Image (cartoon, rainbow, N blue to C red; front, side, top):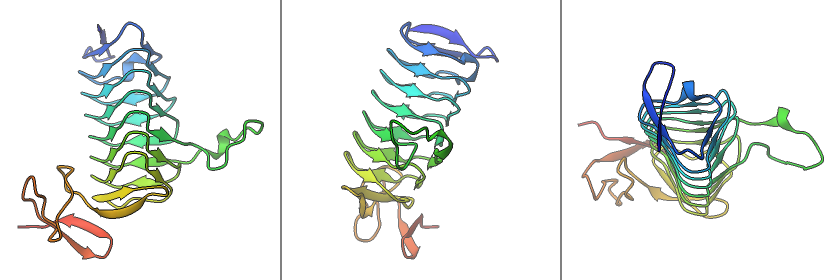
Length: 197
C-alpha cells in the first residue's frame, strides 16, 4: 500500500497497481486495493474500502464508510450514500435495454442506494431503482423495482420476505431486533421506522 494525499493533504491508501485518475477526490483513510480503477470526476468519501478489481466512475459519488468488495463496477448514475456495503461481484446496470450496436449513453438512469444498505454477493441492481436505507438485498437477487427501507429482499425478481434492523438481523414477528433489542413499527403498510421511546 502506498500513502497518497488528497487536495487538503489528508492521507488515503492505494495499492501500487491501482489506477486513480483523480486523487484529489478520495477521502481520508480510504483504502483502494489491487487492480482497481477510479475514473475522473469520481468522489469517494472517508474511511471507505475499495476491494480488488473494482471500477468506479466516471462521475460517481460514494459516501463515507462504504465497502465495495472485489469485482464490482459502479457506473455513472449510481449513487452510494454513507455506510453502504456492496458484496463481491454485485452488478449495477446503467441502461434498461442495452445493445452492443446502438449507443445508449444518453439513456443512463440514476440508481440510488441509501444509507446503510447491504447488497449481497452476485446481486444485480437494475438501473433506475432506489434501494432504501438499511435494506438488505440477498445474495444473487435481481432487484427490478424500488426496495423499501429496512426491507429484506431475495430472489429473481427480488421480493420482500421480511424486515431487518440497523444491525442487519432479520426482525421477529413483533419487529424487534434479536441482536440489539431495538424496536420498529409499520405505521404505514410497507414502511418501517424505528419506534420512538
